[in-house]
Image 1 (cartoon, rainbow over the protein chains, first blue to last red):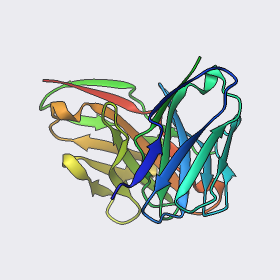
Image 2: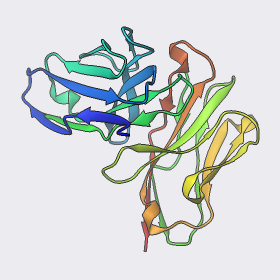
Image 3: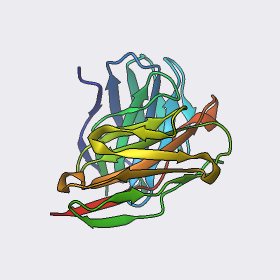
Image 4: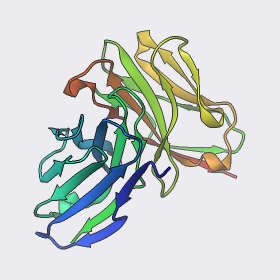
Length: 112
Length: 116
């Protein structure tokens, strides 16, 4: 049982490049989330989804887009990467909003 | 808006010392409370959770937390820490209802370093 799987684990981009982070969960969870973790800032919610075909903005959505075309996958896109988006990105899922979230191993993204 | 405060940014203890990490939240209604742990280089893992009932909850690895509603607090405790408890600890809160206000709000984390 893999749980929540994120790909890639590491990536270096140049300013202005685009990329997509993939999150896949095999627990049949309805809710999925993308967070960014920065030193001294804790985890901040970027976007979330309450089910297949739905997305919503979190606390820090600017510069990111998401899609949930399939229930098990939640994609995070950076259209034009900026150095301020250098961070560790975590995906999480939960069966309902109030249940504990299960986290992936993270993607460390550096933008030069 | 809800907020979560963790008072200690970095705590350094010797093995066998007792631990208490503070967490306060700002929401006055029904809340669900969580403590997560992140070991170096790893993802967040659930330590314990409180939804309702006994305000003293026990989690994994000997950790426990006490919900004190009147103080809006959910402090994490462990009687005797081990070197393997070195990690970053996050308190998280969500309101017990739907809508965007029901999303999980994390504190900024407390790094715990345990000296052998």
